[in-house]
Image (cartoon, rainbow, N blue to C red; front, side, top):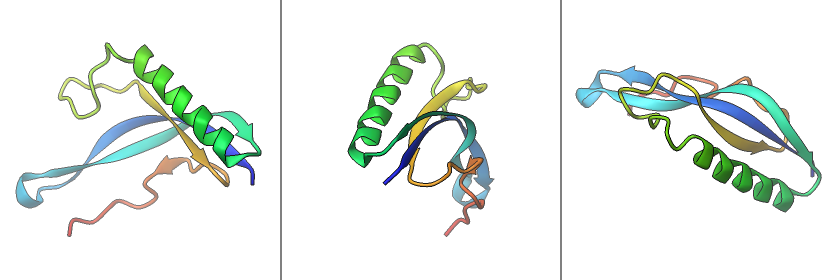
Amino acid sequence: MRSILAFYEIDRAWGGPEEGGWWYDTGTFVRVIALHYDDEAAIAAMRRANRLLERLQRHRPPVDSAAYAGGRFRAFSFSGLPPARFPGRRPQYS
């Protein structure tokens, strides 16, 4: 099966005021990195890319920090076309 490896800029979005407030993770598509025809190769490449990104971004504030102003990226693998953003719908508090 074909897998697409893509970069996403990650962030957090305000979910609502329930129980003192809650946040959820979001991502915005940046670019396609690679195309793999083997799922295991795609997962290995995603892990390598994320290890490298962690090393390159180690001096940036984490996403859950009040000082975070964007600029952190993660690699994700998809069996179809990568979505423009995730999550597709805003999550509901339950």
